Image (cartoon, rainbow, N blue to C red; front, top):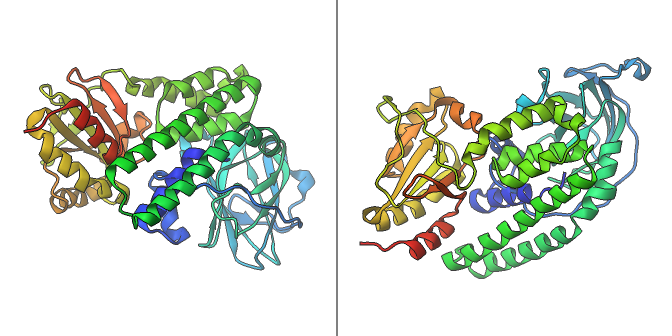
Length: 424
């Protein structure tokens, strides 16, 4: 599904990390979908047919389509490649599935493939072909549907012929026409500025660009809210909302959008999970006190009160040791920390590294000379509970421990501190 924010995540991957292969991109998806992809419109579709089947990751060329029950899906796929294999990945946060669903694989034969399996309700997927193509999110329904993949249209929504994706093409994209134009214009300007400054953009310009794209995000979120009012029974809206929430965490607009959905969608399995997650994570809404959390320090001792009480502003920075975008922010954070640490500014780092990666976390603290307090949420247990699924994520707290801002880029944090604080 077209998503302004997802497009920006991908852009940052390519600009910051110089990722050039699907294998690299896939590792970021596994590590919880961090950066946003650069804007591209859906190009033309090519029409052909297909006929290979697969169920529960196993190919079955003799499966009778008529025998598929009401909870089965069957996809006839066409791809502009003669051979190879495709992988159908279910939405990456497994909590939204009522049963364990693994990836589905199928071989491409003469440009055709088929996939079948069991889904209890419309579900969101992405599709990968070899290491050269990865789609954006789309929704499959129980029943038979067709799909068309153009591997030259990487990181775009494929053509899927079912009622939900017909809604996407006929109604949803029209609702976003103005946002699409705004985003197109923004990235043309972004590319131009990056070229002029040879990728070394001044902080003042970075700040203005960040403010501009956040304005677009807010308008995009508002459009989804308005769309949900007109389409309360739309599984497209539900999965779009789940996707945005899983990346960005709680905000009031997401909650308002959910409330506009029909009782049927709210009470569906993914709807009920989303409702619970919105309720839990609302504690991290702007204006609320940052919750108390017990974590481990660098000696692996349990610490309950990790937030300093005597600071004017405190940045809570969520990261992990192999997160390149997280690491790329450290030099600028270090500069700001040195400048304002004696003036009432503090940083608290919280790693979500796995149990087996605790040593990597300790080495990263030393390697990148992180002078502020560091704690670890082993295996991201608390982060998952709070729906903090993208990294880096940060929260800026005031002297009362209230959340005043979220996901500040270094240029934005610099601007904020320059406006609010003096330094010694």
